[in-house]
Amino acid sequence: MDINFARVKYIIDYFDDKPLIRTELKYRNDYELLISVILSAQCTDKRINEISPSLFNVYGSFKELSSANFKDVFELIKSVSYPVEKAKRIIEVSNIIHNEYNDIIPNNFEKLLKINGIGRKTANLVLSILYGYEGIAVDTHVARVSNRLCLVNSKNANIIERELSYLFPRKYYNKINPWFVIFGRYQCKAIGPKCSNCGLKKICKNFE
Image 1: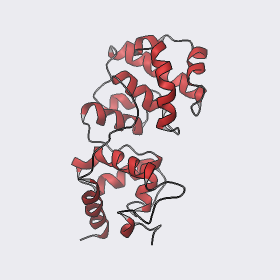
Image 2: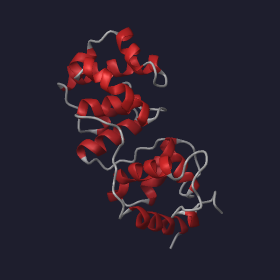
Image 3: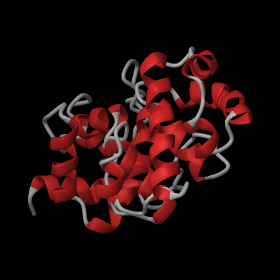
Image 4: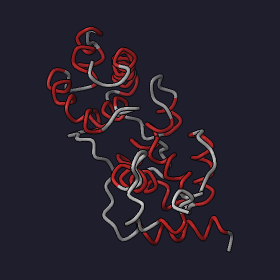
């Protein structure tokens, strides 16, 4: 058996019997999920969960956010990373979904990706949670864990997505992000990973 596929089987066996946490972002509907995911880029879910209630109390739908004043939105999200860019982005995304898709997030990867402000990670993650789409959302945790477990040797998200889609059976595509995110957030941390009690240390190049 190819060493990479042996690693994949080892990883699947490790994660498959554990609870699957799709996201730690707090949301009540599709609108809140998409906006929260966009805001969470290069920012912690904890921070987004702290600021999102205030945002959603003022703007409770794509329609309301689409016509929002930039400065007002900025004030509500200014503690997140890149607040200027993100304020513009969530207003623009809301405008498109409200006017072109009748406030319904399209159940189509290509359509979602064409919306300015939505990248591959966001599209893969939101579609997998809402519609069970089989896509691999690559964020910093997925990138770090994938490299440490010797599944890939790249920092490029598109390359990582492609390599993981080759290594893993399709039925696991939308499990890879929640598996690696939770693992990366609490076990395989960027700084101070908990290697001594890690169930995957046997196949980790850092531990070796």
